[in-house]
Amino acid sequence: MAIDRTIIVREAFATLNEAGLEGLTLRRLASRLGVKAPALYWHFQSKQALLDEMATQVLRESMAQSADLAALPAWQEWARAYYTRLREILLQYRDGARMFSGTYLTDADLFAPMEINLRRMVDAGFTLRQAVVGLSALYSFTVGFVIEEQATELAIGQANPQYDLAVREKRVNPELHPLAAAAGAELFQRQDARFAESVALIIVGMRAQMNAHLSDVPTAH
Image (cartoon, rainbow, N blue to C red):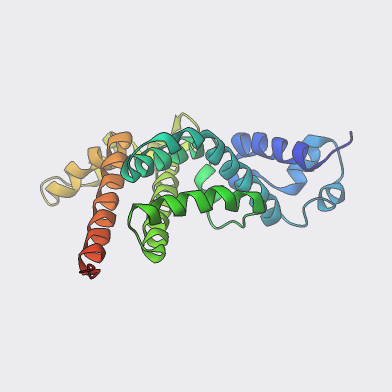
């Protein structure tokens, strides 16, 4: 069959969902496409190059699905909604956050929405550095949170029995470690609420930093 980058990436996502990140190999992908591995190297020289393209596709999807958030009046609302949506998108793919992290942006057109996001923060009163640090913190937290979240699953919707609370209770002696034992429910359940509370904490810190900066700016007389 004739293949191009679009077909390869589409089937790579399907392979990722079936076999996980370790199982996504160029050899397996070539077999799925009915071609020899060298045919893939014409388009992607390595697995990392393929992952870069896949991550860029996820970011492109995230940006497109978040375009409507520009109408939100406050930067806090926008940030909370934007990173909540990014988490939702990453969760749609098996090992989605691990696939997404540490990759290289292959589409220069995506710098346009990045510019818009940074401009929103600067216009709200952040310095560029504060905007970069704050949004990077939200981004890194979101990806890291989902990496840990997906580690508790063998596949999408299939829980890893190692993280079952009943199994954990047998390993953590509540008499010796009562708080660690009780923390299990907070760590491995109610993930939506924990994510939202954590994002809110970062946003509070960002707001405090911006306000401290604004209070230091001399006023004109």
